[in-house]
Amino acid sequence: MLIVKSSPTIGNAIIESLKEIYSNESGNIIDTKLLEIREFVSREEDLFKIFNTKQKVIFLGGNHMDSSVWEIFLETCKKENKKPCLIIFDSHLGSWFKPFIEGGFPPENVLLVGTRNLPQEEIKFIREKRIKLLSMNALTEDLNDMCDTIMEFSDGRELYISINLNIIDPAFAPSVFFPEIGGLTSRQFIFLIHRIKKIQTLRIVDIVGIKEENESNLTLKMGAKILAELI
Image (cartoon, rainbow, N blue to C red; front, top):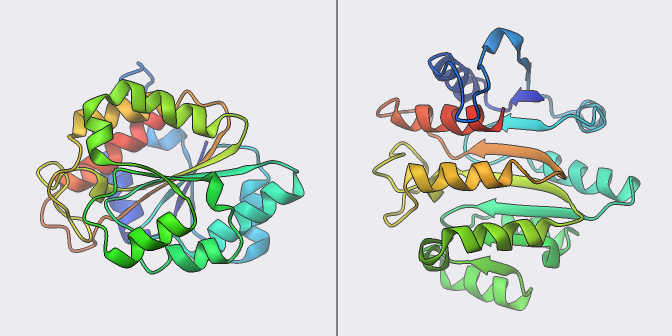
């Protein structure tokens, strides 16, 4: 596993918080000294090298990932003749999403999970592109069944998971960009992570959405907990 700090400030803070976690819930010992951790680079050749290591890569970011990461993930999949799959955990979409889809990422290979309070233009775009969406209501009605749906959606595809911590209710992760009431509990999301971790084609994860002006270390602890459960 390779951990890349796409935001040095947030990345360092998550790693520091990770030092307080001695083992994950699978019983794996967490020792930050044994982890391969790098600073983020945006040069294409460096990103290609990262993706070509065949390791699982986890990016620790700020608001959203640099668009070059998404683009090179797509290009790498094309070169390897593999189908890309992007699953986004986010309370709502941002200005980056529409250009990303219009730039060539196949909309049928995108799954939006846990969106809530979407602007009308985002709802219209999702419907026009027939992008699959799992609402927060669907998640909370039957979380286990929705995990099955997520795993089935990614079957046979190279998987990129994008985790914006505003998917989690602000009661558990308050220091995020655009917090939205009505998110998942920390326990519910950890359950999701345990299921997602089992997907054999999981290749890249990003953990984003944490504000640098952190009002408490609770959100950083949540980011570190997600990272720990992926190790």
